[in-house]
Image (cartoon, rainbow over all chains, first blue to last red; front, side, top):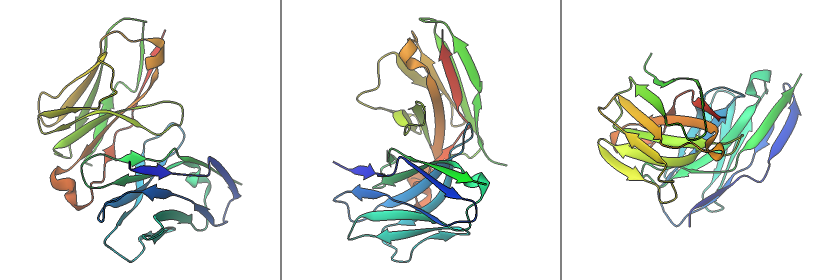
Amino acid sequence: AQTVTQSQPEMSVQEAETVTLSCTYDTSESNYYLFWYKQPPSRQMILVIRQEAYKQQNATENRFSVNFQKAAKSFSLKISDSQLGDTAMYFCAFTPGNYQLIWGAGTKLIIKP
Amino acid sequence: DAMVIQNPRYQVTQFGKPVTLSCSQTLNHNVMYWYQQKSSQAPKLLFHYYDKDFNNEADTPDNFQSRRPNTSFCFLDIRSPGLGDAAMYLCATSPKGGGGSYEQYFGPGTRLTVT
């Protein structure tokens, strides 16, 4: 069975600090796609970053970057210079490319002023 | 801007009274999804459409139905809502062929309250 595990239910850091959210997954597929989605309180789910498994280079989007370790089946998200607006639930998700996402349980991230 | 729109944003219904939630999209995506999300849990897929082909998840209760009259619109019908159906309902879309990444684009959600 394909699964996604986020081992940190909640994290809290000071504004401007760097924080890393963990995600591991299990699959027998060789090609697949990984995502981090952000869902601020009472607001819309939005895509933060995506990674194609066949790409060795780690994806980066401004202050957000990933550490993709294919052999270890690990896909962590690093947020640099954290801002108050980064407070949200963060979901790691996986798809083997069949239109369905397999979701982790989520990590609640709180950025403190 | 192209987007996914959900109406209403908040819906209150009575126990057992049918309710319909709507979703529209201006992205011209072929695939549309309905998710149920409870209190900061991960979204749970109810069903999805690939064009007009309907795909129901095995554990989606029969109480939940869906219609997609055209590419742009999709409806979620809850025939006899129970207290356990109170949740956020998310609509999402993705392009045909995955658009190269199978990313899903989400609407703002409809929060359903059952009294």
